[in-house]
Image (cartoon, rainbow, N blue to C red):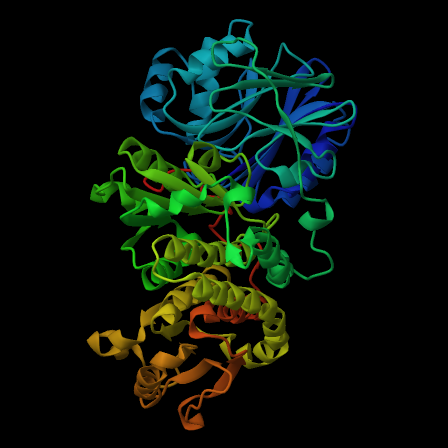
Length: 611
């Protein structure tokens, strides 16, 4: 969730911190703050609301703040409401600290520190962490941080300034992402790579409980016991231009239009002799796919919807039983796993806390774990037995678009590979399926041409309060993703229902003028779907039909029809989701919503959902 940065170098730290924080504001925007060495002390400035509020306050109250070393934070509130007081950094006489994560035992530590004479100004767990480290600090930052690590429970990425160590930033992590980066005569700490791209493409991943120190001379890495650790520098594959809007009004729209390229980049390297292969790209041997009796797909949010389609594809093509679990529920149902179980984990960031916890449980129980992630070196990627890296590139908008599509494409590749390994299809059929996927990817370019038509139609959605999505089979899973996109960025209450369930209660909500998006791309299910559309139309629903081109549907039962390019039913989700993304995007713009940064949401959920 929250974004943290640190800087040490020859530039004015305030300017660099504000700039790098702007690259992380998608991680949280309830409040922001910075601490900077200035003269003999640390100056801390914080402001509730967007990063611009902080910039305005700095300009008005501290125009001469010129130090070259500091830390910054943009917050997504977990403990304590958004306010100036609860904003980070949290400071003591000895130090200033910013934090991403949740300290689970903060109440006990707060009581302990109150007994030691500490006072608390905020309601945050972060202030507790700051004052705990303050209580342990006797001149050696690494020793104090290491001692605190043995006491703290939960997840954290900290960046810390110690008042008697001007020009240095210290940082550590457990369960929350953190990188260190090196430029020319300057170094950085950040939660994520996009923040530092304008300054450097050379970065290092910080291991759990490792401690890093940066100054203008370089980066030093230490193990939790204080011994030196080997620093491995990587080169970011993303350019600065990739992480900027590129002329689009919003990052989300840019990322929708980037999907054809992201899909091609993800799929094409994994095609060998007309068949899916993960051996060269992902170091997954061919024999890997023959050893599993059951598969569990585990993910959160949008990734879980990709998993739902993955379940359908794997069972249909490979004839292997698949369960699809919300990651936050997976642990609590005491899943039955063993050495012939595959747990397939999907996460854009590779840092999703509930998915990471599910991975650890799966490994404890002897299952094989396979992660599908977009970030090399992320926690999930490092801990999984095998990893398939997607190539969506940076996704800045909170609402996922291209990351979902590339996850979906990997589900197709895995399903075909499993089908071959289990002899559910022969080589000829597998090549036919692979060709169908490649055709679908190419066809996504055509679907983007529906943008103007969608923009015109949704003018009737400006003052909506409720909307329903209906679908069957693969269209039901697709409808769930469409519903999530619409509600998270437009704030319209909407739900997705399996169309066959209408008569089991749902239809009572359909009244005159209620909008219904009927997703009907599955030709084999069309007669049943048409019957369901008639049921809602006869009760006054305003129906938008999303259909495959060439399918005959009575025009009297819908208000508007959007035709998708005709593909085999199996591949319609690849093109269908783009229409639903555009529908959500234009509705949000029409309603004046903040498309890239919807309220109450953050890009990467790096804290446990139970917290």
